[in-house]
Structure formats: structure tokens, C-alpha cells
Length: 463
Ligand code: NAP
Ligand code: G3P
Image (cartoon, rainbow, N blue to C red; front, side):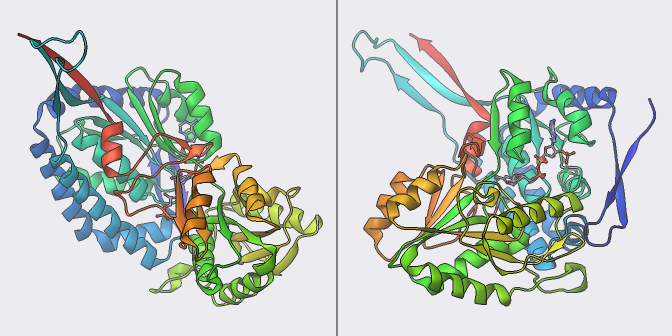
């Protein structure tokens, strides 16, 4: 078998910034074999021992902040400020994961309290690892969304096969080096590189894998779910988060939150606000405020500045083509272009489309780019109905000054999380994070992720 490598190009310069191995099936077999061999000793360690590795990794990650942030900027086109914050947030996440493991408790269940139960019998309930976890991460948070799988899996006593997004794999490999530098025993964390389209199916259907923790698009997630059959899954997928703005909302606050939520990192976030649903009465005023704020967004190539840039070039040309197609179709069907709509290479200028209607693709599809559709509705019921018609169910935001109304609408929305008077967002990282419908399976968030990647073992004592 030829030794193949994949060149990684920067979305900012189109230059090759490194390369990774396109692993063969035999190399994947070897990695998974190592993970299985390492499992026995790793799961036998005390939780306190495993926590120590995480504390060390959290510190080393901070020591390598400059280097890693530099790579994130080059590899996935984030601005430097966001790249720093990704590294810092990840260091904290790893630390807090270890802290959380400290509080994991087992329990015992007496049986005498139920009819037919016995005084001479009780069960001890403990958590144990699931085995070898396959962690597959997306390009947009190459460090954070990798560590949010790896750290809870490890502290729970599992070993890990980590498959980073190809665009993001240099950053992912550096994260894995950090864990190695923390002294992880050989084989506990193994990186598998190669294109998902080539090696993905082989890895997800490998008999050595016991659990798949995946973040990425709904399309790939659904494909993996089909292939994986009985393997348990934890999945964070796509979204079409709506900001619902009611008549009594603080429109200045709503516009600020909506613009930040829709355009940071060019909207390449699963939790980006991807549509505004505004009540007719306030839609014009809201639109004007949004438009003004969009005009002051910083747009450009983040490699030339130390500060923050909101709208950066998209990850590749294909993504920019897709976003451009959505804008063109909406305009052809009568949407009003308030700003943007232009493109230089893979940089799409921040675009706001007003009077978007249900027959336009932009009303339903996830652009993963800097384009915000505004949809006018006549009533709150219509707003909820439209929000729920989406195939996705990640988050929604509701802007109102009436707390009763906020709760009433929140209770009707088919999503994992509702944000009241705030943009949609993941975190803080110990909160539950989940998507329903086509946005995911299961619940992430530090303690939830540890729980998901461990299982209950019940031992019944009969005296
Ligand atoms: P993607 O194209 O679905 O890729 C995600 C990961 O899956 C990559 O590591 C990819 O590897 C791998 N992959 C592709 N085909 C595979 C296969 N057949 N078997 C196994 N793995 C396979 O997603 P992306 O473009 O990186 O990320 C953007 C998407 O992720 C958006 O839809 C976004 O909403 C979603 N996302 C969701 C969340 C959330 O928390 N809900 C968070 C972040 C992103 P290659 O790179 O080698 O193809
Ligand atoms: O797309 C990644 C998703 O997890 C978003 O995270 O922190 O930007 O809301 P955040």
C-alpha cells in the first residue's frame, strides 16, 4: 500500500500549511488494536489517577496557547481573538471535566421498599467505561469539539480513537500531542487521519469500536447512524436556530444579539442564528437596527490583524458557492437584499435578506455562512409554527420583556435549548447541550458527556 498524505491548505491564503496521513485500513486496524490493548490498564486506574492526566493536559494546553491559536487561524480561518478563546475555553473544559469526575457517585438500592422485595437483597450501582470511543469532530472548533469528547471519554475510563475533520486535523493532532505530553499511557488516545469519504465508513463499522461520539453535518450524521447499526451514538448535528422577536421586545438588545449570533466566525457555528422571525409590527424597525449593526461588522482576512474580525473567508470555495446559491435563489424569488450579497473568493460579505418567505431555500436550509434571512409573521402562534416546521431542533432565541410570554413560547418550541433575550449559543460547557429532531441524538455537556460515555453496572448482593 502506498504511503499517501493529504495536503492541508489554508482557507486564508490557499497555501499548503502541512499535511496528514491518509491512513490505510491496516493502519486503522493497528490504531484500534492499540486502543483495545490499552483499555484494560486504563480502566483499572482510579478515577483520581485519570483526573491527574486531565489536569496536566489542561495546563500544557495553556502553555501552548500561542502556537495552537496560530495554527487554528491558519487552518480554519478564525480570527486570533476567537482562536485564543477556543484554546482557553478548552483548557477550562478539560480541567472542569476532571473536577466533575470527582463528584461522580455510585449508589445502592435497597429492595425491601417494594412489594415482594427482600430485606436480604440490595443492589450496588456503579458506572463503568463503555470501551473504545470513536470521537469524530468537525472543522469549526477543531480543538474544543475534539476535547469535549476526548476528556470525558478518558476520565470515564474509556480509550479513544480520534478522527478529526481533515480541515482541522493539524490542530487536532496538536491537541492529541498535548494529551500525550501529559503522560497518557501508550494507546489510550490514538488519532486516525484521512478523508471521511474514504476511511469514515471503515472506522464507524469497525468491530473494535464500542461507541461513536460525532459532531458534524446532519447528512453525514444520518449516514453514520445507518452504517453503525447497534453501536450507541451521541451526535451534535446541524441547526437552523430561529430568533423570534415579539412586539414588546427591546429591539436594540435583540438586534445586537442577533447580529453577533448570526455573523461571528461568518456564521460557521451550529448555534449561529440562522433566521429571524419577527412580528409584523416591529419588523421594519428591527430590520433597520440589524442593518446598521451589520454595517459596522469587521470583515476581512484575519491573518493580517491581532484583533477580532467578525466575518472571515469561509472554510472553502464549495461552502461559499453553496451560500451564494442560497442568496441568489432568495433574491430571484423576491427577497429584499438589505446589505451584502457580494463575494471575493471564499469571502462572502455579511448579507441580510428581508421579506424571506417559506418557498425560499434560505428559510429552511443551514447556510453555515454569513447570511441572515428575516421572515415577517402576523402572530406569535405563526412564529412558533414556523419555527417548529424546521427539520432541525437545536436552539431558539425569544426576545420579549414579558417573562410569562417567554416561558409560554419556550414551552412550545421543539428545540433542545431556548435562550431568553440572548443569542443562541453553546455553553457554559457544563450546561446540557442537545439537539432534537435532525439536530442530534443524546445530550452533551461535561457531566452529561461523562454519563453518556459510561454505563451503569448493577451488582446485586444477596445476603
Ligand atoms: P461534516 O462534513 O459532516 O464532517 C464532520 C466530520 O465527519 C469530519 O471529521 C469528517 O471528516 C467526518 N466524516 C465525513 N464523512 C464521514 C463518514 N462517512 N464516516 C465518518 N466520518 C465522516 O461537517 P463539517 O463541515 O466539518 O462541520 C459543519 C457541520 O457540522 C454543520 O452542519 C454544523 O451545523 C455541524 N456542527 C454541529 C455542531 C453541534 O454541536 N450541533 C457543532 C459544530 C458543527 P472529513 O473532514 O475528513 O470529511
Ligand atoms: O458549531 C459549534 C457549536 O458547538 C457552537 O458553539 O460556543 O459557538 O455556540 P458556540
